[in-house]
Length: 303
Ligand SMILES: Cc1cc2nc3c(=O)[nH]c(=O)nc-3n(C[C@H](O)[C@H](O)[C@H](O)COP(=O)(O)OP(=O)(O)OC[C@H]3O[C@@H](n4cnc5c(N)ncnc54)[C@H](O)[C@@H]3O)c2cc1C
Image 1 (tube, rainbow, N blue to C red):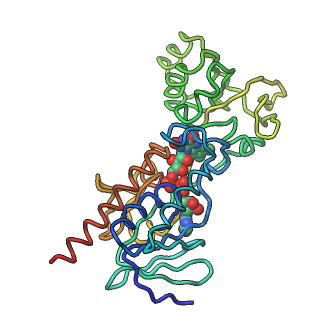
Image 2 (cartoon, helix red, strand yellow; image 1 turned 135 degrees about the vertical axis):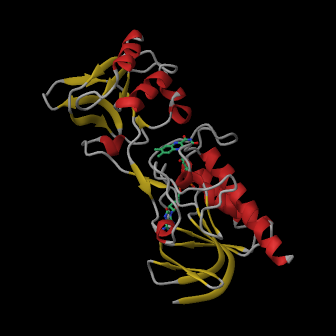
Image 3 (cartoon, rainbow, N blue to C red; image 1 turned 60 degrees about the horizontal axis):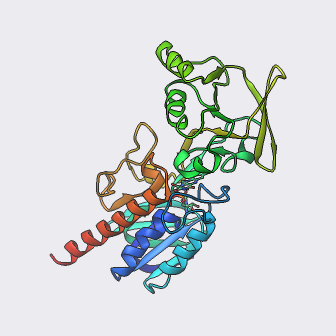
């Protein structure tokens, strides 16, 4: 099915970053289409924290409220679906979806987030976002002083140890195999009474996503109630790469300070562009991207 409407902007990804951009653009009277497949990265977490006015709210409620407010601007439309292809044309871009629709726009904004890749440890994915957490600013306060593990190795394990030591003194690092920490890092970790366990993990014992125990391959166990971990990730959407957007070494879409990619008229915002993963950052970068797109459209129209 073809959709002949020519939008000013197509925003792919209608979570916090995309909706924030859409609000700026709707308020700037722009014709906007948001395409969203409904899979935000925080969907497993029961409560979202550290975003003022919404502290402790269910993540889906924040998005629901945002969507309702954004769709009050009648030039903004929302399409539920998965965008699978993007093509550059002489006058802009065509985006096609999994179900065969195609949409045209002058400009594209990717607010598509990232996909966390669950490690191959039984129980990990069930606990993810619940008792396995990625960020102390988002969830550390609620689990302060609890018996806590860090599932990481090398520089990252050291960084986490330094950081999480602020929220609890009952900390153990699990490297899940031989530690790759330097001697100096090991010395500093031990100085703070943090143990390093190198045993390989077999599985997590948990009750409905609440971790209770690590079970190692040698059948020994370790009781705890919270684990910090930052799994590997990949871009949720491959269209930016296929359009030629540069990807950083860390795996983010490369953008400048105005959220512009290296491809003309293609911008990106939110988690897809930044290691600072938070609702606040997604909303801030989305709002900036929306304003920048409108700014470019006003300049083009005023020539
Ligand atoms: C487990 C967990 C808990 C967290 N807890 C907190 C917290 O308490 N506080 C906090 O501030 N932050 C928290 N975060 C971080 C926060 O959730 C993210 O920073 C935020 O969701 C990023 O927003 P975003 O809009 O960039 O991406 P996302 O929210 O991930 O949304 C991306 C959207 O794009 C859509 N999409 C992707 N590809 C396509 C496509 N091809 N076509 C159509 N749609 C597409 C997806 O379906 C999704 O709806 C948490 C993250 C995780 C993983």
